[in-house]
Image (cartoon, rainbow, N blue to C red):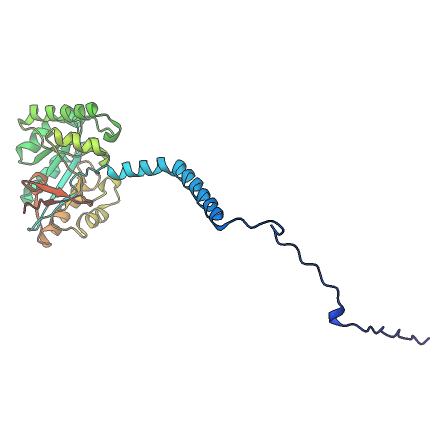
Amino acid sequence: MTMMLRPKPEFDWKEEDAPRRPKRPRPGAGFPRPPRCARTLRALALLGVLAILCACYLGPLNREATAVLAVKRELPVYCVEREDNAIAISFDASWGGSQTMEILDILDRYGIKATFFLVGIWVDKYPELVQEISARGHEIGNHSDSHPHMSSLNEAQIRTELTGVSDKIEALTGTRPTLFRPPYGDYNNPVVTVSRSAGYECVQWSVDSLDWKNRGVEDLVRRATSNVQPGDIVLFHNDSQYITQALPSVLDAYQQQGLTVIPVGELLLDGPYTIDVQGRQHPANTQ
């Protein structure tokens, strides 16, 4: 069977004859347009409301931020601006004491004097070592009486920690400490200001040997000798596992670098000074 195609219808269509969609009336059409001054006043009123809302929400935040910026951060001394090649090494003594005599012997062989920061409970346990450290000409600093987080204490408690250990050290050696190092390196503004008002210079460190992590002799030597600069204060601990094995290599490296090791108290500047945001002590500009 043959299929016949239905012919396509033809229309006489002209584009101008196509129906057009009616235009949607503009909002507000048919109403009088408000005067320009009224529109301006309405915009200003809206801006005023927004300003009031912003002030309500952000005002307290801004006041707190301003207050924070207005508080001066009190910093301990981390290192010192020096014209010579002097550095200081320090030993924190908080717990054990079995290696202390060997440390003192090594320092004697090299003719070096160091600073030992002692905790009161360590002084109670090892009074003979306290006296030996002093007798060999080393400097003794205050490291608190009970090794607390100092920033958690109030001012009276801070003073008690400072006084307790200094009284013990003075009773054993005849000399009262003038340096203070906060345990754990933990401090805030009251810790620094109270210790200074009590006659101590608050001291941290700029080179950390991390000897307490007991990572081996090579790691200790590398950390204690790499990138050491004049004016640096190096931190060790008297009871770390590898300190007596590493200390001779550390001191040899300092000598090869032309560095002179002195106690922390001798490294600090005499007279007026400033401390920058990095904790570096500079002589005050008196001009």
